[in-house]
Image (cartoon, rainbow, N blue to C red; front, top):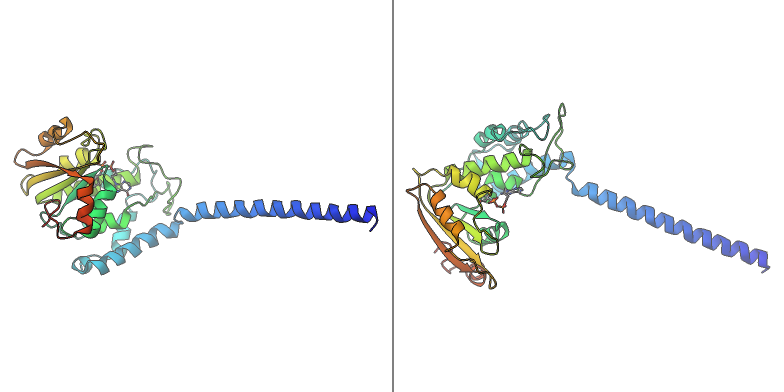
Length: 282
Ligand code: JS2
């Protein structure tokens, strides 16, 4: 093979190699963009996700099935934010939704949480004696979702929406404030709150639990609030922490307050030994 022939062959090989590399890079880019776009629920996605969760919840909780029409619930939800500036969705815009969802909050079951969502959900996943907001139909449908719209749009978006602190009246924040206030106002008998000793302070007056739920408790139906402070081996904080005295004072005067430290190891035992008395459950 002459030098020229060898040159042209090796030239072709180099050209092909570059072509493959370029193609490879393009393919990877397309994949990354596709996945990121795919992750944000497409507009159809938010609606179908919520409707699907609503139907699933009704199957899992026949006691709330008859009274709740998922399509009507979606319509009541959508009217709160669709076509509006996504920084101008006040809390009361969800009043129609709250009225559309029929679910009685049983006494002695409410479990509030603050900076301890995963622990609280790990508990209610295993022990049905307690119920967090996300274990109710309303919370279950919207947990970990993002939604917003635009002025004069009929669409629901799940990306490019304002974050929790970007503006106060954003659709997601206003929803959780309204839903949390509704749960607190409906909570009766003995309530519980799961707090974390790994957070300082464990009770923060800027939290949703304090600024919304404690403020909306109905003292005429609520008898007591038991705080469970989950402590890890390194935590120094205990029930004598000043913030827990603040919680006691923030509660309606007739509501009896108690606080119990709970080593994380004990808490984990509650998830494996379901007969072990835990969080007031026997
Ligand atoms: C965005 C969400 C979600 O008692 C609890 C719950 O009932 C809750 O609604 O409010 C309390 C927790 O809020 P807090 O005390 O501010 O604790 P945190 O750990 O800072 O949680 C803040 C998020 C509360 C609202 N929220 N927000 N996306 O999926 C979502 N789920 C909830 N409850």
